[in-house]
Image (cartoon, rainbow, N blue to C red; front, side, top):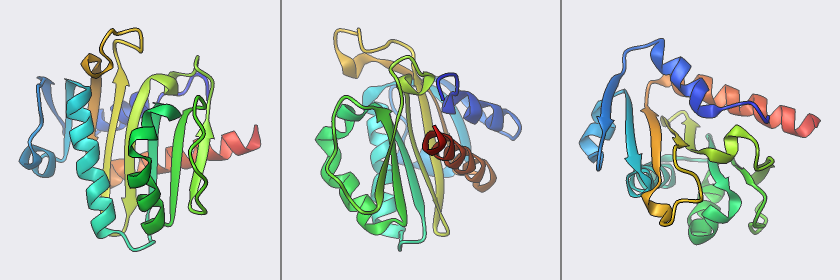
Length: 186
């Protein structure tokens, strides 16, 4: 898992189908998010927080225990402020897999599984939310370009891919499942 990058996998999949490169953005509107199947962009943390929230809210409103959610937080402590929302996502999902460096221990939930990795792993600098269910398929995958040494963490910039192309999302979900299988085997 050390050398695997969900962002690199998403980029490889995105390049195999039509996508739009938006360059540097301050924000992505809900309309752009919904209407453009696959977009690439660079943005700061608040933009990714907003887009993640759009996905998380949609999961809470649309799922019926038939879907899985894969969420990567770089460090598990990054989810501490929003743990209540993710516990609710676990309530309404078949399974929630949370990926991160184990610097904090989230509360237990019967539908939530942790997938941890070392700080030297490529995944330790990636942020992702992948929702794969019959009612919703969407992925947001970003890679941190600045790191946690940035004086203001919210100013960190991410290269990001968002897609609601069902084929791309299904392949990313399958990739996440492979990572989970490898982490269980280790």
